[in-house]
Amino acid sequence: MINIQQQQQRCVVTLHTRSINPLSALWQDALQQLLEQLEQLAASAQTGAVVQINFEGSPPDYQLEQVAALGRAQASACMQRLASYQQLLRRLERLSIPVLAILQGQVLGHAWGLALACHRRYALGAGQFGLPQATLGLMPCGGALVRFGRLLGLQTALPLLLDGAALDNASALQLGLLHGAAADAPALSALLAAAANSAMPPQQPWDSTRPALPGGALDSAANRAFLQLAPARLRTRHAQDVPAEQAILCALAEGLLVDFDTAVLIESRYFCQIAIAFQG
Image 1 (cartoon, helix red, strand yellow):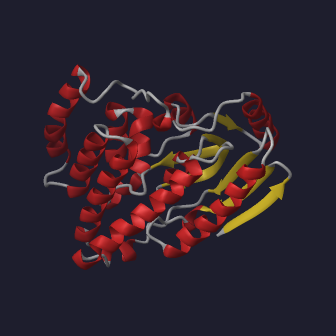
Image 2 (image 1 turned 90 degrees about the horizontal axis):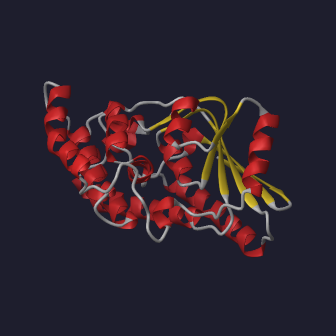
């Protein structure tokens, strides 16, 4: 599930992306053990230490049987599991050394959500990146929707989330979701060397003192006008209501009004509501 190699000041982690599941106790235990090692490295590290996480891309596995088995009796457990996962990702984001995600092939769904929690993201070869859960009648969870929205802003993030669009390297670079792309290993090494020399602090935009939201604040005139039309646009997409799309809109908009951790809590509540109603 997780392979770790220590190379002096560099910790190289390799993940099998199909194993990544915020609702899985097995995955959370593996991530917990990884974080304990990374925190030890960060505590003893000298200047130049870095964590490199290699995402081995593959078609995502959304464990739909597990989601379909959720009922109202499991709502509290669902929220607790997502809260536990969020705590793990926050520990990753708050490491005092940079965490670099190296993305190969298809990095979609939960795997892309984890990549968004890394400080910087680099594609190796041609890739696909995105959150396609809406195409299954679900919505992203584990903070993926919140991170995506804060990186792109309301008007850019919402259409991509609703369509479940998979972005190629060029599109992801243009949107700022990738920090670089390399055709081969030598080119990647050059990118990582440049990143190591840039002395950029390992901090997420939403953890800065005055985080700026791409596209402006939610109460800007442009975003208010966009939100006024959004429900009507949802109705024109399908002949019937699609609860997952409505939940994505609400979770995204409501989350942009509050601090990051509260936004993830809102996302989790909407996800659990949709998951409980999910029929597979």
